[in-house]
Length: 368
Image (cartoon, rainbow, N blue to C red):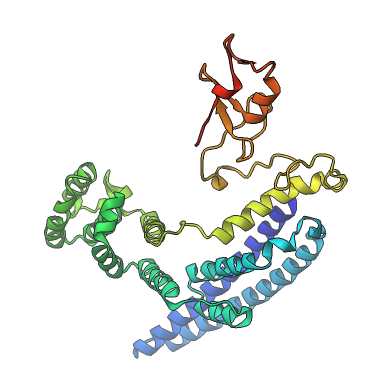
């Protein structure tokens, strides 16, 4: 959607201006802390630095507000389409409304917005049990610690859930210990790294090759691992990856997907609306509507929104559904049930890919 790409571009500008402002405030805090902690300093120099930083903050603040104002105007300009035609209020009434409230609560619990969840529960009347909220609170606290590069809470969580993680074949606990070991290497703490290597010994059967690399990195403790062939071990990206891995494993143990279902739904809707909007008049005329739950055109949501195997009938060139399942002919070729009915003549079906004939009753439904 062109409007979405324009909005994303403008939002990036707003975010960039905000980061500049935050950086200026952080520099000012550092200057204040330096003055407070150092009595023997050049006051004039620090005073000039503070004045310069205040000027930069003032400019950044003005630019930030300007970008916010422009962003509002871009929203008004770009989002002019009326999408009310595609809404169905029956889908969010009755029991479905409770499911929607549950999705919203879960979404904000995943983000750690506990106060917002409490306010939403109060306004909507949705009942949220404490036992459902507590795991998300713990999850966000541990992820917060990981972002601060504190591995202890996550390691304790892994210890408490070790049987379940082993059953899943998870590498989370090893990856956490790996980061601890790499931190010691980066700090050039040879004795600490050698001692910690004993803890890593428990993973020798499952992560032998990675352990060999970690042990090899010990050779460069004195000269610095950043100048060796093992420099990739200290890539900061590993800390972001461990946050994602922990979230994935924790959500899996709770029986949840890694991504918020609400986020996935909104993302799918944003991808589908342009295609649906382009054939709006056809939809209004209902010329292509078939079954009640059938879309009038195929909408490609991309691989990020595919969660199970799909089969498109090679004859009708349409995706199979529960009401039109894939059917296997005796020869082994697969077509949709609707195609099977159309090809049937006198209780016989000739395979469209080979000369073999078969009876429609002999075809078997395939489950993916």
